[in-house]
Amino acid sequence: LKTLRLTSFDNSQALLEAINERGLASSLEELDLSGSSLDEQFLPLFEANAKVYGKLKRLVVRDTRLDEKALAALKKLGPEVIGEPGDRSLPQYRYVVGME
Image 1 (cartoon, rainbow, N blue to C red):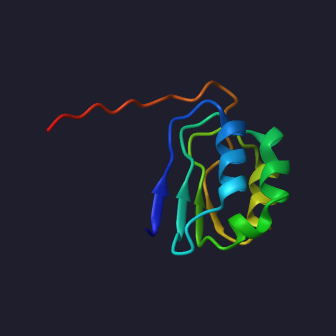
Image 2 (cartoon, helix red, strand yellow):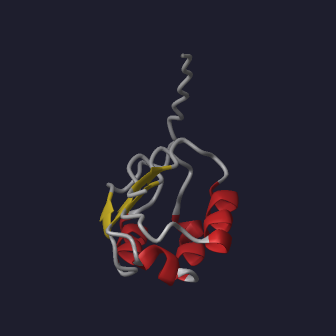
C-alpha cells in the first residue's frame, strides 16, 4: 500500500485519532485527506504524532480549511504537503456509489 485516500469526511478529529492510535502502514508514501473539514484546530493531533506523519513522502490536503500557517506547520513534520490555503467555506463532499 503506497497511497491511501481518505477523502470527503467531516469528523476530522475521529479520523486523526484513529490514525494516531493505530499508525499507518510502513509502506505508505502518500496520505490524501482532501475535501475534508480539516482546519488549524487539528494541528496538535498531527504535531503530537509527528513520527506517524513524518514517515510519509506526501500529505495531500487539497480543498480543506487549512490556512497558510497550518500548511507551513504540517510541512515541518517532514512530508511534502500538497494543498492551498482554504477559503473557510464548508468542504464539498463527494460521494461515490458503485456496483458490479
